[in-house]
Image 1 (tube, rainbow, N blue to C red):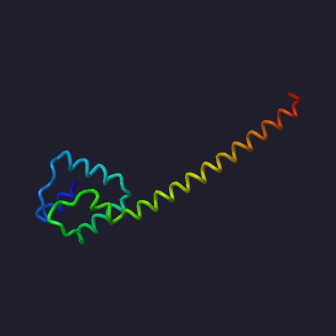
Image 2: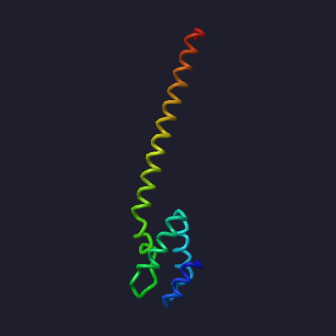
Image 3: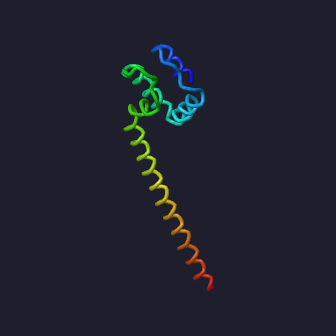
Amino acid sequence: MAALTTLAGRRGFPLPDPIALEMDVEVMAAWPRDLWRKAFRSVWERFEYRRMPEVPDFRRYIAADLEERQARLHRLESVRLRLETARLMRQWDNEVRQRRGSGT
């Protein structure tokens, strides 16, 4: 919130209505801190329009980073699921062996 109000003051932009500003902050607060800082710095340095930048204006500078991190997260989740499947299969195999060994 402070960063956006500072940007607006520096550039002479009127702030959006309080609810819209709050929604912008909520969306951008979900981004990783380092990417938020990168996006803000890029807007501060490069944004040339005569209006208050909106969420997509900030996101444009970090879109590739966000996509890369999301892809990495999906790969990690896939590995986790494969490991969990292997663990369950081992567990089931052990249960079957125990049942066979006990004669049931």
